[in-house]
Image (cartoon, rainbow, N blue to C red; front, side):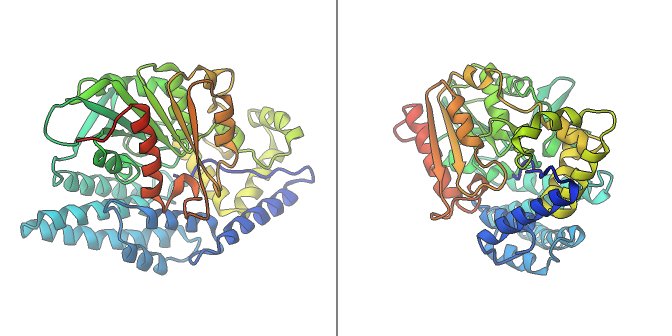
Length: 440
């Protein structure tokens, strides 16, 4: 759920850039006085994200014990400890199922799937690392095993897309074919999977009477792991086939199809809704107007135009040195740039930052959105500060902004750790937008 990377470039050169970047992130890391990983903002955010998984996808105690075994900043340790917990929980799930305890097995398989997904999070600097594929496959296997045990079962789907398919899951309220509003949900930059959407909005919507279609698009968990299919900026080319597929599913009201994008999905989903007019309501959680610009937050405004031009130069050793310095100075920079290379198919850090510039809602795209739109904003967002307001200001459609604060425990990026609070407000807005007075 993390997203792009604030990147420091100061006129004094790469050393000053690194020092400025490091100081900024050290301050961010200390601001909330994290009880775990106080020296590593990215490790703490991902741990807080794990604590925040609701709807049965995590147990507080399992997360606390696992995080307590991890060496701060050590990617191998992160993998080994989350994998260790996943293996233990998955084995317990298999034993429970063998003894006929279906509910217990359902819950254990669900947690194991989340643990496996988390384990490989920091390994993408080497896309050929076999641990990535192993964790991905086990995560899918465990989630699929859990999904079968829900009532009604959560149905795995393969959505036709160009010459392949996109993986997803169809969450139904009940076994009937009663026409209901449909919420389509996808995640964002860091491969937050269709499985993870289970607790990141899907089950909260099902409880309120929405059928839900969760899917992974190019660059996200399934397609990038299965085929190395990278992100693409024209996200409407992804969502339109998904809507086509959704209309073939039972119990879908074609006049009440909503779309929610999470994290970087807060730019992707609005981009799709600008062109795909069958989307009747849009939630940007959190809103992003210009993902490329969000990667250049600390580049002085007067240097940004020249800096962006240098990103595509055949050779730019000074820029390369600055990027390298920023990656050494900040754990967030190191992770996000390497993951960006992985998910966008970029061969170098500079190539990733160049590719990121195409992901924006400029040139009238935001103004083209016509459906009612909800923009979410987290007060303490460490990735997209200011972006939700910028998106909101450019919208000309019926629009609402929801601001989540640190004082209510919901100020982190995408409100991690405050899911029930956040989804209550988001889905109340959706109910009111669709003029739904309670579901059955």
